Figure (cartoon, rainbow, N blue to C red):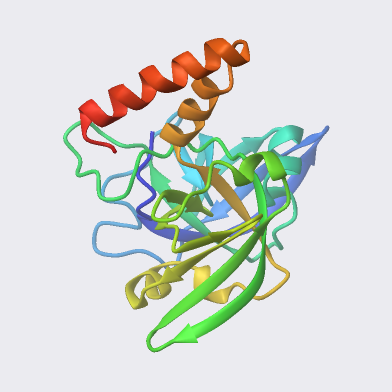
Length: 226
């Protein structure tokens, strides 16, 4: 599990085809601090979110690490199309006791979205995205949470298959979201709660679904969500 709070960034140094998948070489050199790019050294076998995609550290290199990506991962996410040399957001898995500064993020990408418009608003930037998969649009709600390229963001507004987010100066400084231009694709992970609520509401017959809707709404009200 992750939080969508980017820990550091890296660069896609190489993408070596391995059958339908590929081995990704990710460099973190140039991002080192007195303690390195991460608060503690990476460990082989640990999970890491790479541009929002949950991958496993396969090997540690002199300037970064290696991960394996399946053909499904390459086709469903931008890891199969991002140019070598492109910036990648990196976040290690959440540890017990860590602050949950963003929202619960699984690293399982639901699909890709395309930036259709960007607008500068003072020191911030408003990004308008279009969702290509209509089934995903129902999971995105105003003031709800989404992860774009692994970054936890609050949805500002929704209109049909489009939604927008506002990127504050700090996020522009520590992520590559400010580099996105109209036409660029990004990885989208919808909110985990929205996904399961939609599953509950959509199962069973219409009569059963109506009854489940009523019970679920009552539970949500009792819990303070409504």
